[in-house]
Image (cartoon, rainbow, N blue to C red):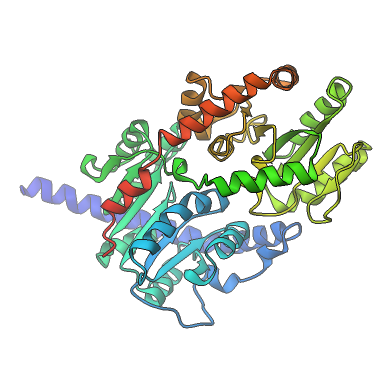
Amino acid sequence: MSSVSSVHFSKMRITNRFMQLIYSALFYVLIPFVLCRLLWRSIKAPAYRQRWNERFAFYHATYSQGVIWFHAVSVGEAETLFPLIKTIQQHYPNAKIVITTTTPTGSARVKAVLKDTVTHVYLPYDVPDAVNRFMACFKPKLAVIMETEIWPNLFAYCGRHNIPLYMINARVSERSTRGYQKLSSLIKPALAHVTILTQSQQDTDRFIAIGAKPQQVKTLGNMKFDLDSSQNTREQGLAIKSQLFKNRFVWLIASTHQGEEDIFLAIYQEIKAKIPELLLLVVPRHPERFLEVRKLCEQQQLKLATRTAQNSVHPDTDVYLLDTLGELRTFYAAADVAFVGGSMVPVGGHNILEAAAVGVPVMFGPFMANFKSISENVLALGAAIQCQDKNALAETIMALHQDSNYRESLAAKGKAFVENNKGVCAKIIEMLPLA
């Protein structure tokens, strides 16, 4: 290396280290505000007030070391991760696995699905002392991050201690790419020791654009296709349909956000006269909104039944509120048509594959930035319907109600789309140093 290059490299290392120090100092300053946000969120979701010690890596128990550590920020990432974890457990039954999440709902799903077969704690905040405590407690031999969670201190620790670090099912949006590029002296060093397995070639190109080296990044496909679509789920759904929703045309509105329920309740009022047997099955994305949606239905004088109250569905019931966690896939199988929310308001959409996998016709709205590739591909195959506004929603549900062949065709194409794209988890297992 020439003297000029050596000086440039040294300056770059100093700049990068300075940026990491600034980042850490700023994070420490912001911690009181982060905790205030947890308190604010705990007003509707009390679980945010609990287990703060884990967010700073203070533990009341002694845990196994030499673990394989996976991080999945919340419910969506956790659900995508489960098939991979179960396959690893089958092939490596003695593996000690730790899964971290950030949200209480993600925590609840990990505990409900994997129970005591894994250890679960919250991910600590990305400040040096918390990271050091977390790593000293678990001493992971492998670190695996779901999708796009870039934590400079955590990543730097893995690099310094030669812990293999992978980002799997990785994706980065165009907007995030621009943001990361503005912080290149922080992001580029963070990615220096990461193997990145992306969902698409576009994601690969974007990771390279924000500082990853081309040899670090490989396009494998989307793990979301490898979800459990067993016949058992379908049969459970059909049993619910027969017992609870008999003689009703069930339109399931899944993963809704604030503002979306208003749209569908208004549509319901408009078309109920044309489809007397119509039943709206509403599933809010966040549990803290269950009460809010219930009150909204009551304000509009709609006859409501809820899952937790175990209400029966009568001929005059208008809305069934699924106010539980972990049952959405089964209720997809109990529906005649499913609309996947987060897409009628600018949230970016949610996973449509769970609905397609159990054989229900799928609809979604115009805002699908988080699932751009999947939505484009499924539309190109005629395996789902995108509705741009409230009028299109009403017209589409009327058309689907009137034409059972249309519904069956959409469902069959959607299920085939999922089946034809499976296999990513197997590719990832081949690449991870699990032994």
